[in-house]
Image 1 (tube, rainbow over the protein chains, first blue to last red):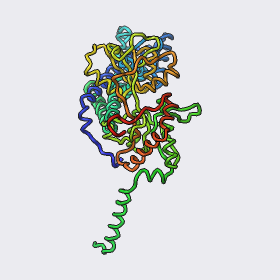
Image 2: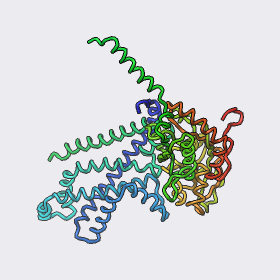
Image 3: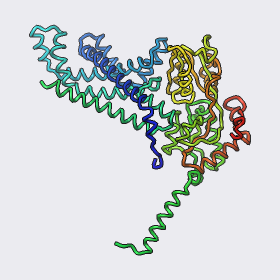
Image 4: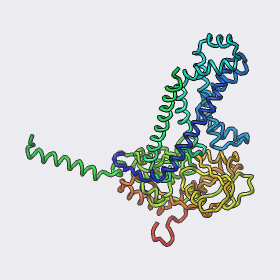
Length: 220
Length: 277
């Protein structure tokens, strides 16, 4: 390594492509977490439901999403569905797989948050004449969000790293673009180092934004 | 504190000898002294590198590594480096030499050094066995085309696309390895793929038998002359490697490997009119 000479000019030359790819990574991360959170909210309610069918559906989803590698999940959405002639684009397959994965983890995080809310809160809300949906929307979920907010930021960073697997099926996100550029220029250390720094910056910005949001939103 | 004169002299002498040693040491000496040649070879790219039923590496490039170790009188150590990992492995000194069918582009040669050519690669267009609407390169307009990320073929195709006035429906998807590329073609995710003729032919004979076929040669595609790769500073090893490849061509060994792994006689590696290889 001592006699390796870094040449940064070639990285600056390809800076616009890297930036585009970084935004694609960010976009996939935000979308997959937002969708995963919506599905996770529904699943975590179902997880506590008395309906056996809903309970089993949720338990299966959570088990599959958390106990199989994300790469395998991407393969299943892309090539697995492809085998039965359902064709998704690389972008859609990665988004679907990472959302599926996120929903599994987020369900468990949210369920933990719901378990932490005392049953007395629910009973009190019902006692005030609220309908079950109102109980969740106005009483339970706001408190749950406060408890699970920081664990969810971990999941956002995890989702961001998961999107890098998209390069295998031809998605030009940050890792895919970096691999492409280094193989064209044969300057691997420069490009991978820069990609690592970009990932670090994106992840830190997510965490800092989340902490600031938490500080201002959960002051009550 | 002042050092006695003889001490200063001694320190200077030791310093000089260390410098002189560092300047003289060549990787070629180290390989002979260690009795081991570490070759970086792609083992996921039949027919140049693959594993046999006993999980031993075989293939065109593996055979070149064995020959080279034999010529040096040392043991061959084949280290697997997938396509995108070829240069990082060399630069980080995990391997002494990369024998991995790498096209000798001037851009790449800014980072590592190439030997004289030992193979010539052309590219072909493969389609599903029952496909009828693609017979030449121009038929690819408006189709979905699967490439292999980071290959000279991909770079050349993207460059040609900029100049061709093709419809906007033409879509390129670059996969991470041959396995995904062939799977995507078999499933109909892409209408055609472009890859080295030898690699497609090998797949069409093996697992892709009856599922894919070569539609046409890519006439305007790049003709890649491949070379063995060493680090730029290992000039002594590079000189020896050049002579080694020259001997392999001269004694007919390259032709033998071509017939064994590609099923055709070796082409003439010299460029007409250039007066050199």
